[in-house]
Picture 1: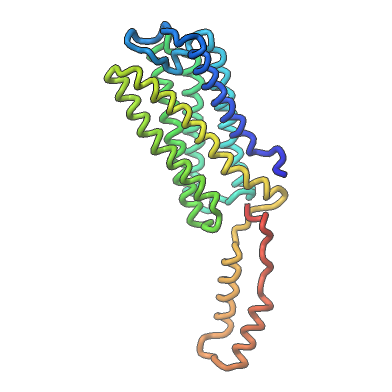
Picture 2: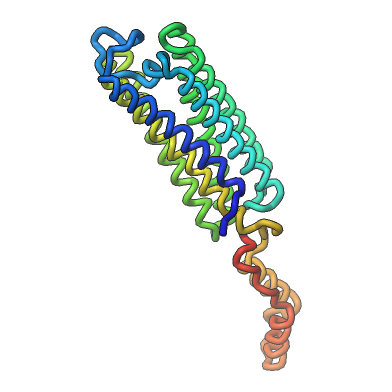
Amino acid sequence: MWGVSYWVFPIISALCWLGMLLGLLISWNVDGRPHLASMDATQHIAYISDVGAGHLKPLFIAGSCVTTVFLDLSFLSERLLRHNGRLARNTTMIEKVLSGLSMVFALIGTAGLILLSIFDTLRHHMLHDIFLLLFIVGYVVSAIFICWEYQRLGIHFREHAVLRNSFWIKLVFILIEVVLAIAFATCNFKSLFNAAAVLEWAIAFIFTFYVLSFFVDLIPAVHTKGHRFSNETEMQYEANDHTSAVRQYPAGRNTVDSQRTLTNTEVMVERPKPAMGSNF
């Protein structure tokens, strides 16, 4: 059984975000897809911010706040678990710097999302657009730094597929979101508001999967409760044993007795294999 652990943070964050988006979208459709006050005269599809600027603004603010708070808790938990050795430790200073930068830009994205929900597009259009830019750029840049960190971790801990899986999930998120964000900005610039609205909803829903990717990062900590991540793998044990044996018995000795002694030595220094659950 997994039990309640750090992995619940991204789950709560993703569910709140998805629930808020569905609430806004379903409400607008149930109301008959009305032309809202903040919509352009030629616009027929509402932006998220158009719906969130009306009577559902409390839902928009609450959903944004809860989503970002629990997402930031996911970031902090991941950092804490790596520091305590319950996830793969950062082995170099640059990995720690990358982790710190990812958290800084995540906080920028957090501020952007909360503020854009408060300063709605109907009453504070320019501020809303600025905070929207902060939200998108903050989390995309944060994801870039996380990918960079995981790429370096994956070099040191090649045997752990979870690092590769998380890296690819986040990389795909970055590529898709950047392409959609460019298309969104282009459509807005060309006054193609309906296309831009569809792209905004798509960007928001895809963000859900990015949040859920932290579940992949945190779930291994369930298996290391009360243990620490082992930096020395079984392969490293064997390599160290072989190196010690070679140093003790140079290549020039090739007699049967020396081979027998070497074999006995290797048996004596063989280390116990680590438990399956102690790596992560």
